[in-house]
Length: 214
Image (cartoon, rainbow, N blue to C red):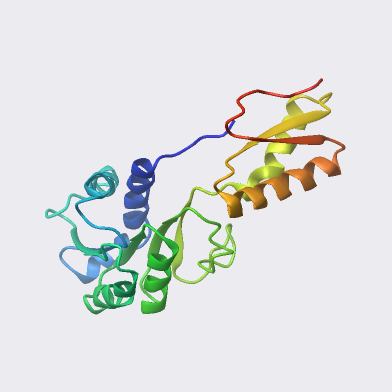
């Protein structure tokens, strides 16, 4: 089974992650921990997402203005502003930077500091994008959430084999618009399937049918 998480839920999870990682240790250094929020978008178009971020903070026990402060920096789709905005958050000595929206946003934060923790959400493979060293051990000062599940394709095949030992053919529904992530996922699934003698049938997501032949 594949669980799809929406952008709002992702930002809420990111908000919780932002405080769970470094703030407990940094809280002793300031009366009110300061969180940096960096986005390539604008507050007008992402009001629901920033609300979800605050919701994640609330669920972790932090309320803006009471026991945590947030410095928002919005690039408003002007990506050349991201390095300056990230540098400004570093100058303000935030405890953690939540980098949201795109890989350039996360990279701008990464370039701005090697010591302040950075929590990100990404719609690409963070290893291939150069954000972290590995999914299980990110390394450095970055960690986060990715909606890409290409590298668990082999796990799907293993689970299918365990649940249906007599299966000979499986279908994979793909999103043809997500080219880079789709290629990685399909490659992973095909390699795992070939190793256990399964045939893989690739279908675009518009074709809603299950092809499992016993």
